[in-house]
Image (cartoon, rainbow, N blue to C red):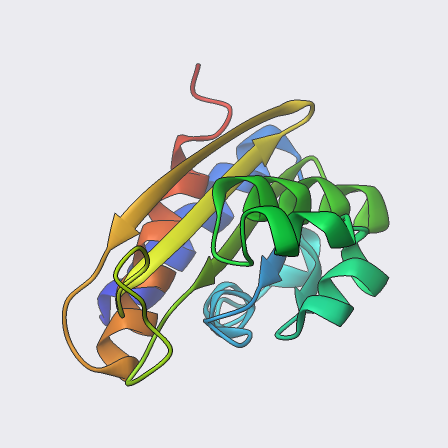
Length: 160
């Protein structure tokens, strides 16, 4: 079984145990996390909604990310992904959320945020954690690694 499908199946079992729903807020993955989760039969029991907010405008309109954050820290930042996760939770009423924003390439990078830079955030109720990662490879590989990291992080939620 493909590693992403295997992680998604494990996530489904995890969410069933918690009787919890998950939502996604995605930029650089373009809906890839939601697609992975919904590969699993019966995912309607634990997948609430997915938000693909590729533009900053949609991050603000759909997820209530404050516009000033884009000027202050940029879309690929801890502050923005944490706001995306909270916004997705508020919009969907899901207990768990994951949010991602990154530079998948092949261009768009900068010295401070080179291609492969991705911020991920995970939320469980009011608790939000986040981390910056750097993935190697082409655009498809960066996106694939981001989906895997997002699913792995979701599997850790509720474990504390």
